[in-house]
Image (cartoon, rainbow, N blue to C red):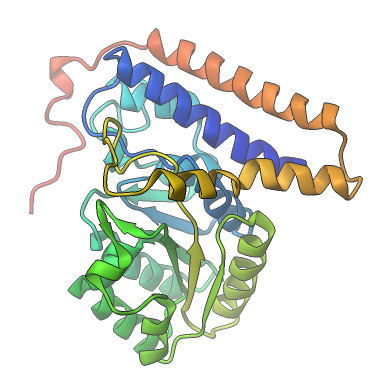
Length: 313
């Protein structure tokens, strides 16, 4: 339980620190934070093995941290340093750390779903009971690649977990304005894929759903679709004024904060004390501060690195 809480606090502290660094112009480019959605990343990755593969989208920091990517290398990557996980070339939306099972992230909405399809195919070919998981938002549900991937995954019984972080908005557009379907898990039914819609702010509910789906995939049962109903407490990107949503809506979701909610539950059940809760948060924030400081001393990439790790089709 404490590990789950620590993971969520690490993600929250990381995102808040990145926001601070962005404000000081130490991090550049578009920045999409997952504050408020930590339970999905923490719960899902807690149900996966180290050898399982994860593919993320344009809001990838939480998934990378939950999958075990070193936070100092993440800070360095966002700051464009050579010590970053992609030597400072990938930035926020194109992270990759294959040794941890975090294959890649991409800024193309829905594009990561098709990439994960290939990863799942490789997992099946290796015959080592590995599974692939792809995180995407509700906006990806209207893309052609999304539906093509559901179809092929079902047809070939690929060990792929479709994890939809339904936060109610496709960038600035509410779900009701871009699809008549309130729950994207219904799309999975069309292709005969087992699905579940869970409270994405309940880390244990997410972990259970992903654990069940992963066990089914390892047994040869093929893909599953898990829709996690959640909410981002920040705008679509850092600096977004978010005038497309009501303040009352934001206030309501703040009362459902996944970290505070989980901590309160643990204390109420007697699993942990208030002191332990505060200690976990303090530990997470201290590790994030240390990682950020370490990253700031990293060297800049040399000119000789311009053509390395670059691929042309």
